[in-house]
Image (cartoon, helix red, strand yellow):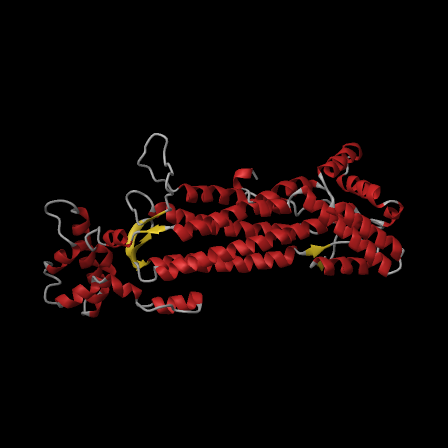
Length: 449
């Protein structure tokens, strides 16, 4: 991911330095386990740990260059690292990597990195959930128009709209926790995964100390269905980000103007048009969501490796693992900040509710007529006729409100009292289930209006 969309803490997880520290820890733990089970001299394991740890603590650009230099000759990244480590440890290095294969190190390291990345993403989700909850309660009783097909439907609560996104991100957090559990898998099983040269207890020892579980069957590599499920979880979260971003982009449109991104002092919207206030953050989030979702197909195609292993997955994961996690981390951080600072215009929302002359209350009028004794078919015909009369003449000299047209309709006159029609036009009736809904979503209803 380009630096523009990269936060330092997440980037550090995918740095060569972090990767090599994890590689060393895997090798040192395996060596210590072998010493405990009698395969390696305990003193040798102690030397590997002490000298290797000192080398990692002093790790510098010169060490990176040295590993790169070795790899340029060997054309093998793990061998290059092991050669560098041997230069630091000395003769005892011959006990490092005994019976292991490169994928034991690579796949277990990747699991650690993905767990580290996921823990950051879970924190990001918590921040997003906190921002959404705060705004949902703030605007619990703020009336706004609900839309279906982009067209005015019936009034709703702006807080409830936000609460719906909160519920989605809460589900996404559960999905990510499940993905973390599935990806947190260790394999120290040797060539083609048979433990032919390794005690299986070594794998269990390493897994426990790294906070992982031993892979059920590692065919020399950890099966990639786990990774595919992980990236699918990231993609679902990205889609949730885009859904919320799209909502804000719509609300900020000049014709709507019900909410907008915070416009910073000194911010410029256009090089040519000084008046512009564009939804640049949510447009950016839409693009980042596309990038995160783009990792799904390559991850799914990585599942079908040849026999016990090939490395067709390797080049894919070197790209999608950092890019997808870095991109999602940045997007979630941007989303929570955007929601916290979102500027909301309740007066504009109220005006938009009535901007079609009151026809958005047609559903309640339909019910009132049905309760008064009309068939549903007749009630629908009458209400639609008056709604269309209002709609088609909006803004014209002869135009009348929906309430006025209903009052003058001969089929309604005398059937429904005026106060019943007035009550049908009251937007607040759409808020009567809010406490129930908020209790269902948040476990609390919050303050009463």
